[in-house]
Image 1 (tube, rainbow, N blue to C red):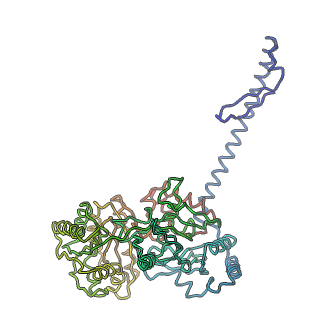
Image 2 (cartoon, one colour):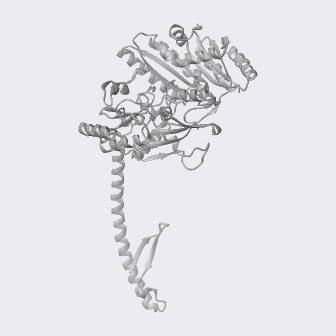
Image 3 (cartoon, helix red, strand yellow):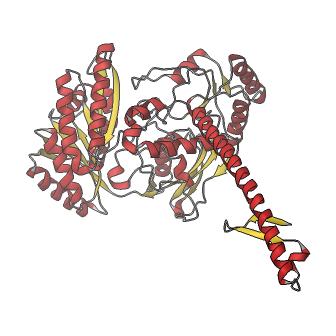
Length: 557
């Protein structure tokens, strides 16, 4: 009898079990007869197996493709629960958290405030219920109930995001407000790191370190009330990025994450570096709450160094950005370089909190960094010479630490001053980023484009790393339509210059249509594959980050 098995190398191996065949004393005649008989039998068997193989291969291929199609469709049209399911989920949540009267809210004002924002133009959608967990175990309980009832979960952190990240899903869902998870758990001064919950504000962390006289700080500095969980989830940065980089650098050492399955993982240990496998921490940085809920983070700290603040004005925005490029290449100690255009300076003069009155010209704010006063003065002299070559005038140092702090706080609150320029307006605040050498062209062309529309749209930005913002002030549907077209041109312009549709705001709802153009269909499909693998039910923050299939089809055409 002849059997055929597949060896590890993929070749076919013959196993002869007939004693007559293996006996060495066979005569030549008997051997020839047996060989002929075996050959005929082998041919028939091989033919049958080949046919079976072809049929099974076809069936397997069809099933695999069917599963692929179903998996792809599940990301686009996940099957969520009914209203009755959601009602049962709320009852389960109330029973589970019966001992905590602040844990579950269906108050209409609460649902509204968590699904809308006055800081952006996106349409708001209320949630079905708002949960206030206090620990990782609470989040796990919520995830299990949500899974049972097929109910979306949208994490809510500081509420400062500008691209609709925490908007409710149209069929309803659970908003997971992390504000009660706001504890600093451990400070490791000797290791320059800190362990905290996701609801802690970065500014509160730095205040705590200052109060404890620990000469360290966390350098990522987006909106003043932004919290660590949201900062990680959007891959944020801020004014310090020119010196310290962004949230996608090594500032988030590890994270404890609740996955859509309810499993809790920790992405790595606390050591400063590791080459052990994938960097799974970065899998969740910039994932915008679509892959997991972050419940604890270890952040890296850095020494506080002496700084000085200087301000200088320019005849136009192109000269200002050209000066930035030369300054950043000069090698002097620069911690921040901020651009405020003439409209921004006007808004700050009229509605800002600073007591200073500034020339209403395109302006750069420098934060210089050094080990002592002498090094700061030397850096200042180098910067002053460079900006003068580009038409800069009125170069001035802040006279003391208080004035420097006031000036920087004025910059951080520029958006709110700009909103006051147009009564009753709402801001479409958007950002793009390009290689620094391309920034003068991008800023200059965008400013011309904005001026041609008649919209009031002040510009500001972290121009030291090629990132700038525009706040388009909108009062009606017509201006909203114009703004949409302007932003689209700005994004396309940035991508054409080898840049990105967002330097730090994230994707959310507002920028997902540009992701295929920027990253390519293959990369976007890889992102969707990861999403399907980790969140096959599509429960975590649906409708955000991943482009709709229509955007991909449009690009392919």
